[in-house]
Amino acid sequence: MLTQKNVISMLLGHAMADAVGVPVEFTKRVVLKLNPVTGIREHGTYDQPAGTWSDDTSLTVAAMESMARLKKIDYADILKNFWDWYTESKFTATDDTFDCGNTTSNAINNFKKGITPLNCGPNQDYMAGNGSLMRISPVAMYLYMTQGNNFDAETFETVHNFSRITHGAGNCLIACGIYCLIAAEIFDGQNLKTAISNGLNKAENFYGNRLEFEDDFKNFARLFDKNFANLFEDEINSSGYVVDSLEAAVWCLLNTDNYKDLVLKAVNLGRDTDTIGAIAGGLASAFYGVEQIPAEWLDVLKKKDYLIQVATDFYKTFEINI
Image (tube, rainbow, N blue to C red):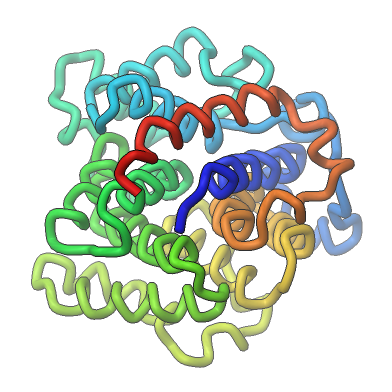
């Protein structure tokens, strides 16, 4: 069952982990070993105040605002919101757009050139970044609220299209699908490890039997290995490559048992700290609840009340279907 509290928890948990990671984005793991993140920091990579979330949360909020306002998924309207974020700093924590991935910016500019929304995101393998995975949670919640934990080919196509507006590579589509399957299991009330296991099983059943995903799905083989959770930290990559990012987030979820430890483990992997934190943090807070987000962190989270309102409006738009 997905409640209003769950939706609020998921967005706040996503934004909070994002904000913890922002000051140390691109920092190498070896550096963080010497000076690990233990809580909220300020300044750092982008010289932002403490509690500032990045594009990961801005694009998530931009999508949620569009969906709630129109009561549906409209890819052109979502991209219009992305353009407003990109050019006017709407949907930001501090009225400052300070971070945007190259693939996302290319897609947004493609949209303004008149390219149809589902063709805006490049589909080349070398552009398989994590920019759609980091903002996929709204479609996971929307699908669960409108059809429950029932994934068919049309459901997967909705997930894939949500990715395609900025990231069309096959690896990105699969990663978003896996995220949404795991999220649906969490929404169903499964414990976290069971939710991950069930979600991965469903993903294997779908993608493993689709010829069009045959080559890309091989890149996720480690994630489906029964010993994946037992990998050493040094074996986990924390880059912006979407397969690495999903692996890192799931590994952190499997190797922690509370929200705070999850976020700190994800961020201290280094490199793409805010995004891996956000991906893992959203799923974690959907399971653990907002109560597990440290109060001293929430106290400095930028525009917390705004995020709560966005989540509330989103929930109330689609709750009639639950």
